[in-house]
Length: 411
Length: 149
Image 1 (spheres, each protein chain N blue to C red):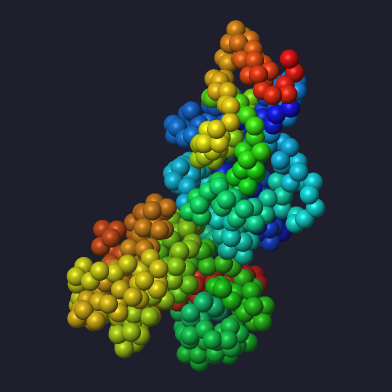
Image 2: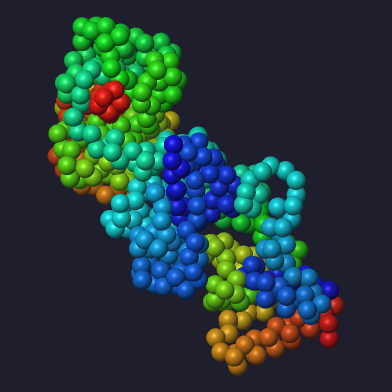
């Protein structure tokens, strides 16, 4: 596998004890971190021309390095921007640099704000996505599924399997994730049964999600891929918007992804969520507290008015407290459901979507995209009509099955 | 002989000036060298581990970014040892450079709060200013206890 060279633009990681973690994460996906080498004169010129008069010299250096990358003075395959969490000055630079590189080059870029607790494991998916975009542009260019392929998405909450044949979904399986391997096997069986085919007939397999490596190894997948690139691909494929810009939002069970996509390939993306309060987990808890199934939460929320209930799920504990207080104060279940949806949408909007340029169509995918109240709340916040494509809950499995067809022999 | 904190702490010229006049410069180079040479966890390039930002809590609260606290774990002990300080304002990058503006503000505040003698100088831009600059540093260092006359 070719070594992907990732240029690092940063302020503070070496002083926070996390530089080693960044390098380890890159190494684990066959990539190499390097600091673009530039002359002192170019540093002065670089940040002067960029026009952002920051005070920290390390940020000035990062700006000058970004300019050198965009102007082609330094060659790289991808860019990683890292600054300290909670630094306002660095946050401004981080966002502007990501936008600048995205708009002025073809370099994939990801940014991250770290603390001293950041580990290589946390960074792995982001690094994997960066290297995939740099390394596998040809694979990601695939727009049509061919042959008979299986895609498995081993997520933190649910496991999904999809069988596709000649650009059509012919079988699906969906189960809560309990044992990673067992859930995957059972979901595959469900999809095989629905498709009416035998396992031996499958020509290629792709896996994604948290359990992708374990499941992929077990079922001998041809493609084992992180969910950022897979979901981008799956989203634009299902929404039939494979050309031009789009934005993909996936509010997951454990973390959220916001991806700015161009022609089906992620350009910039954020992945995270400070607390489960900003994820699908909070909505599960809300449904449980209201004594309803999660599938009933969306329609219920559509009937309510969220603004009448004060709720802030920045932290899942306080969010739950608001939930209990609202019900005790006599709020209707409809209003509480709507408030919970609004709160999760607001957290994602405030914490993540500010870091991605929202370009229409905005496509919501993943299991939470079936909660209409959440989709509405997100649409209201962004002031756009959100697209929820058919089979959106199977996004990772569909993306995997689509890209796996590139591995069919003779394809 | 006095321990003199220099700012920018990476300035080799300033460090050399302090040593020439018989005092001990407190500079980043010495502190980082000690870090790198101390056997322990392998955490290149500066051997700063996630434990160091926690040590930095002595000088900056937990809501202060990790990079500031990590830097303070290096510079905080130097400030505590310092008998005097020389602060150069608006220094050229080639003279010495401190990466984080927030850390720089905190360092200067802590130095002033400590009550030690401080020499504040603007970075010289002409030859004439350069001569005056060196003369001012020399005068300040000579007036400190234990300096070379």
